[in-house]
Image 1: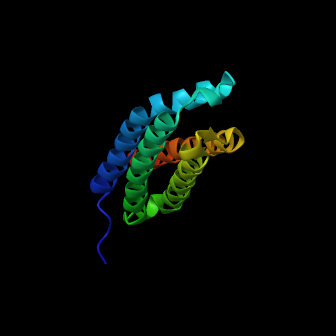
Image 2 (image 1 turned 90 degrees about the horizontal axis):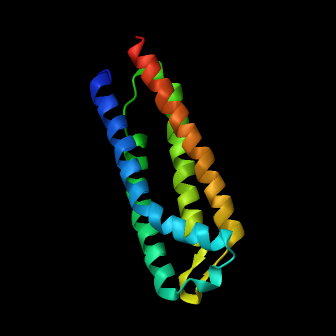
Length: 146
């Protein structure tokens, strides 16, 4: 059985991190619109068109995250980072679930947002992001300290 290529493994991890940051940056302005409307108690000001566009953007971004999640699931991790890689897979899965829950909190057709569900999904994403960051740091430390 062929051993996983450490360099290739790190390249894929780096690509996932970079791409997920890019996707997040693209979605952030839409997120900020909803977050501000919730915080300022102005959800009723959001139009069907705005919420449809936001929901579509979130859906596109979440689909990109699913592709990244799939690449992590099929990535052959070096033995020394296998355990932490599994934790990374789980944290990324939780993140994608949180993104889907955020999408589900938006009822674009009726110009409504379930602010409680939106807040819960945001908290789930934040916790998952912390987990992802921890795993990436740990993987890097383990591999670089051979």
